[in-house]
Length: 461
RNA sequence: GAAGGUGUAGCUCAGUUGGUUAGAGCGCCAGAUUGUGGUUCUGGAGGUCGUGGGUUCGAUCCCCAUCACUUUCCCCA
Image 1 (spheres, rainbow, N blue to C red):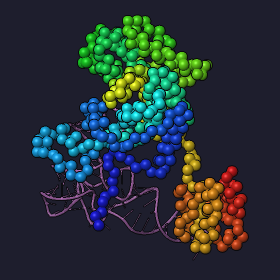
Image 2 (cartoon, rainbow, N blue to C red):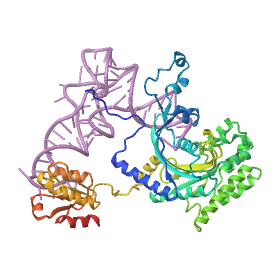
Image 3 (cartoon, rainbow, N blue to C red):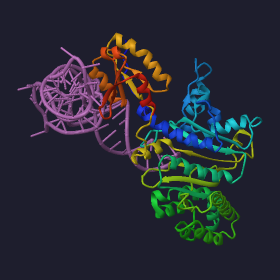
Image 4 (tube, rainbow, N blue to C red):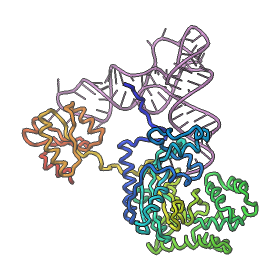
């Protein structure tokens, strides 16, 4: 027999039971909040037609799509000429399917396909793995999970408010207290470009500004110069980027700066409305202190399809990138021939959240998912005696198992110990004679003889 | 696409200026304790030193190639 060296595809991971318990804890927390806000689950296939995915992520993105070779003789219809034209032209001929690259495009495809039957505004959340043919690095995988929630078919700023509320609730439920929701608005960035007298270079401005906290103001200015910004226009933006203070402080300064920028005014107006709605939903709460909001002019987010409010969440005690982000877009489905479908969405990065909770030791001690009580297996007679009792405990919804082999008790107890099973029931001849079972508490080592009904009472308390 | 780093026991890693028998901690197995884990003590198993080639009397160590993993830049979550 051919022996295979067991190994993983690089950039992929196994999730052991210990890790899955923790991941599920995070996912359940998120799911519960999403559903509380009226979002419903959606799943789409792992594989999509290649043509659905290509052209949506830019040229570099297209290269990172995992393609699937056609089944059967995929070279059947390929001519020598096809070969000579190179891999770029050959690829779509031998690969018609690919693994999804993100959740947004499949979602857009779904909305476009079902626009006739969906009720708008349509709210969905989607938690599924996505694949990227990238070389893996720290915190970057070739298979990883995205956790998206979107509303399409409305321009209402109530959606943005809900997102802020959901982020707060999820993080609070996970026990994270020191975090910041950075918020900005694409139109404000456009306003910024207008102030600089470079209204047509918003995209360049965004790309450069996005790196601000990473590479510092000097390098950003350098990059902006390279991208054709004039020195005096840089001088106009620079003090704005360094603005400090509360929303109201910044707003006043920006309003005067933006008096000739329609876009800038609109951005300010939107954010102000969002904050106003938030305050109405819960008066007396402070934007910065209670909602963890931080209006950050330097927040840009690389993705070009955002058109309205954008946000990103940072955990302050942990030096890790953002754990959540999102924004409003005007045209989710345009590339599928369905125009004018606006929406807003955001997503949680659960791998990063996992690391955050691990570092801050915020995972609950008892996840309550493991076995509560184990029967030892002394011999065949005891095993038969135990079986109906096992059934009885399980009927009481108590997580119960019986050790499968008549191994030495030392081994059986060792197993219970490693599995952190809190109670063990020992059944031997004495126990069977009196119908009193030895019930051992593994935490403190105390044990006593009890009837099965007494044991159930203890376990159900 | 570019530049580095690392591959030695199940895991984390020492080590060898080239020399007989390659080590530690943890884990695993067994015993002390024949009906009791987590502590302690004793013993044991477990290695093609990533792979292929070269230099050499001799290579885990030096050289070359190759593969795997990993980090940074670019980009991204």
